[in-house]
View 1 (cartoon, rainbow over the protein chains, first blue to last red):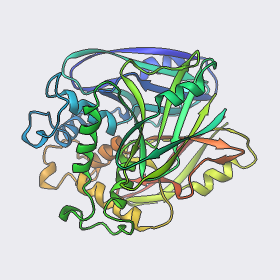
View 2: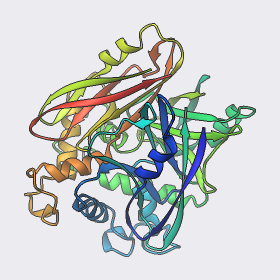
View 3: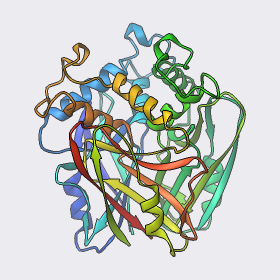
Amino acid sequence: MLTEFSVPTRGPGLYEVTREVRRWLTGQGDGLLTLMVRHTSCSLLIQENADPEVQTDLTAFFDRLVPPSDHPSMSYLRHTYEGPDDMPAHIKSAIMPVSLSIPVRAGAPMLGTWQGIYLVEHRRAPHDRKIAAHFA
Amino acid sequence: MLTEFSVPTRGPGLYEVTREVRRWLTGQGDGLLTLMVRHTSCSLLIQENADPEVQTDLTAFFDRLVPPSDHPSMSYLRHTYEGPDDMPAHIKSAIMPVSLSIPVRAGAPMLGTWQGIYLVEHRRAPHDRKIAAHFA
Amino acid sequence: MLTEFSVPTRGPGLYEVTREVRRWLTGQGDGLLTLMVRHTSCSLLIQENADPEVQTDLTAFFDRLVPPSDHPSMSYLRHTYEGPDDMPAHIKSAIMPVSLSIPVRAGAPMLGTWQGIYLVEHRRAPHDRKIAAHFA
């Protein structure tokens, strides 16, 4: 079966979608869940769901690894039409996953205790993000 | 169903395969498409298909993140037998995806408007790359 | 069908699981294999299975890209409760894959000649890692 999840975002950071995904699978049996973001400037991550500092630290690391295009070290970038967070968002979306595949047992994703599913927004402006989902 | 796509490459960069993939799925119904490169020195990406500068910028970023092994900062690398682009290609293939999973509706991959599917070549010499594909 | 593989680890590095995975698929037909680590401080990689220096070089690169949190360049990290390898492990698990999808023909994963499947441990202490696996 197929569906699409909507995730409204308000700037960079992780947005958890684990609950919506679990709800969609309720009552299903064994199988495979696949998620894919339909954009090239955000990502999907499975990450720790306990300490919110993990999310702050992750965002801080990737902002240092891929600074905005108005940072001196990024002066070689050409695709900057939508602002200094435009091309870095594409780069981050090449580093972090665009799709995730998660085995499902008795209608429950086989996530570990500390794993949550997140959409990672790389753009500063608000966006309405779409995640295509498949289960079979 | 299974198939294998061939992608001849002529040096580093992105090679679009969206058309071949769409053609293979024509006439199918809902399902899941999976692609996997059968190599450890190239990658698969879903990236922007509109402005070719995105591709140039992506390649430029990853060349700075993972310079050739004859660059002073990479002098610790040992696996350099096939030239200065050998080990950096393996590293890039650990950062960018080796496999992609894409939900399919009525025989059409559920890609966003600006998403294309690309093989990313990391080696300088021409190669004949193979992508294993599965749909069900 | 579903299963779970256990991988005991003794510090950072790559642990090959190709043989266990192949054995599980023996006698199956065509299909799709999916693997997912049930943790947020280790990863899965498909990498070269010939020269062990590739593995050493990979680990060396990622240790330089994401140094321990007691390194001066990482002083901004806050999630350091389990030691200097804690948050860097989460970051590495956001860069390298958490899940892999591999087309299977006649019970054999369609890996290239030089491809092996590895769990990548990012933590220093010994761990008992679990990989959820699905085939259909």
